[in-house]
Image 1 (tube, rainbow, N blue to C red):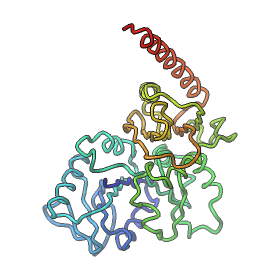
Image 2: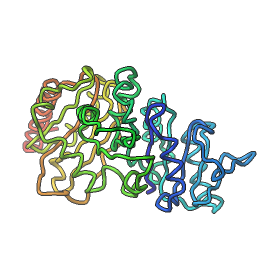
Image 3: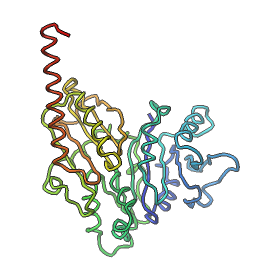
Image 4: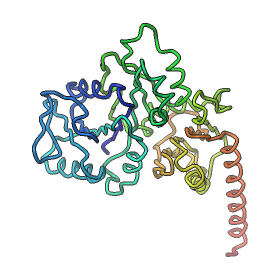
Amino acid sequence: MIPIWVLTGFLGSGKTTLLGRLLKSPGFSRTAVIINEFGEIGLDHDLIETSDESFVALQTGCLCCAVRDDLVLTLEDLLRRRAAGTAPPFERVVIETSGLADPAPILHALMMGSALAGQLVVAGVVTTVDAVNGWRTLDRHQEAIKQVAVADRLLLTKADLLEMPATALTARLAALNPAAQLLSASFGDVEANALFDLACGAKAPAELARWLAASAPDEARQTGHVHDAEITCVAIVRETPMRAVGLTLLLEVLAEHCGGDLLRLKGLVNIAECPERPAVIHGVQHVFHPPAWLARWPSQDRRSRLVLIGRNVRQAWIEALLRALEMEVAERHGVAGKLAATGEE
């Protein structure tokens, strides 16, 4: 399947400079780039707009289109053109949002687009953060906090303008989203594959190892305390395997009771009915991907681990919810087992 990356970041955080450089990079070839405000990115003579098409060809072999209608329809059209040979045979898609955008609706569209199933998969979110103005931006704009909270990779831009490392800002970013990989770029210079690799996000063992490391409990995450008071990160580790119905109930309750306040959820779950193949779960707000099954465990650690980032998501409530669901499922399973043993219906 073709991986999709979402590139977001607040106004002035360096997305223009970043994409301008990446589009000239051989490592960014065979990439389809979708932007939601055509003309926001100044690509100078490297970008030649056609008069009646939503696609323009780049000298690097990349493809770029303006989101003029629905995102899913745009992606379907991309796939049709690729299959027909009228578009370059791209191997990844990057969707760049406007600086004030909430990335959640884009992720919802990608996760709910049934027509895209089996062809495209959400690989992750890259968020650019201005090293000079990032702290003030986070103080003033909730959109910027949300962009950071949903990221898989955070790119600190304009680091070349600082006399000293942005230690306080990086610590704040780590508190907001400890599961995200933090990278740095000077003059927009960063390796394309460091940001948008061909691995499919949470399904790749290397990515799993990185963000699951953030689920190791420590004092800060146990208390859920971060600088931005309403945004909390909760890490849950369970020794006992979870039944499949229990996982379904957990996701249903989270969707119903947390909704838009659950900015991001990732998890690797040991399912009792299939202990040799862990389930990867991924959700944004009230929308969840169907669990994906790994062929095998990425390490010897077979505990279930969940990382939740959201507004006022509390460790104690999640733990209590899990215990209640486990007890309910155990009772159901116990009754079913007795009925089966006695031959009753």
